[in-house]
Amino acid sequence: MVKILITGSNGQLGMELCHLLNEAKIDYLGVNSQELDITDKKKVNQLFETYQPDVVYDCAAYTAVDAAEEEPGKLLNWQVNVDGTRNLAEASEKLAAKLVYISTDYVFDGTKQEMYSEQDRPNPKNEYGRAKLEGEKVVQQIVSSYYIVRTSWVFGKYGKNFVYTMMRLAQSHSELSVVDDQVGRPTWTRTLAEFMIFLVQEQANFGLYQLSNEGQCSWYEFACEILKTTDTVVKPVSSTQFPQKAYRPKHSVMSLSKSAKLGFKNLTWQNALRDFQSVADIDTIN
Image 1: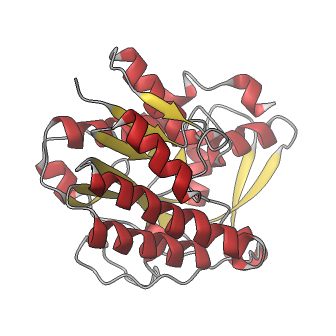
Image 2 (image 1 turned 180 degrees about the vertical axis):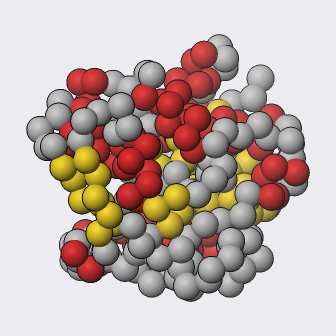
């Protein structure tokens, strides 16, 4: 029997992955950040020696993009996304386990008008992107059997995200302003989790992949679709009206052709959003 380990099992993606495996009646060990601090090399090694996983889904990550721009977030970002990744990579390689590592569109600077392919040279402009790119390099240098999956604009049932934020604000605002000069691909955590499982089960070639839902949009267009059944009016504005500590790519649309060639069945972001909203956790919104 294949032994599966999920780190960060209490996060937005980790919980979705656990839910999918439960649905499929596939056994796994899920550990949250309290049960396993991946920056603690000794504890990581102890868990791997005890459990002996064959597949490791690394859903543990520091994702506070703006907080990562200055201390103490800057250090924590590096400790989790680089040092913690190295601990998991070394422990996985020692057991010849497959490692699935999640990365981000923020490894790109967003200045290219065409889609970014896996072969395009990364050029991260914020601390989070720099750490995640370094995590990619760590995995590539250490692990023989790895899948790196870059994704973007993640939303899902478990945890805070843009969709829940818009749905919550619409309950008390008749008008919302959302930036329309940043373009990317939304990603439903269920689609991403399905792809992670797909890669392993289909024994796809090891390497770097990119996965989001099909199609692209601006944050403004995304918000309009989220709130299309409400009375809330969404107005487009420039990102200069909402200054943030961390740089955001203007155009971070990543090519999905490599994942599509595997035969993975994807959804448009509109259909993914519709399916998500049908199962959204209302308690999370309020």
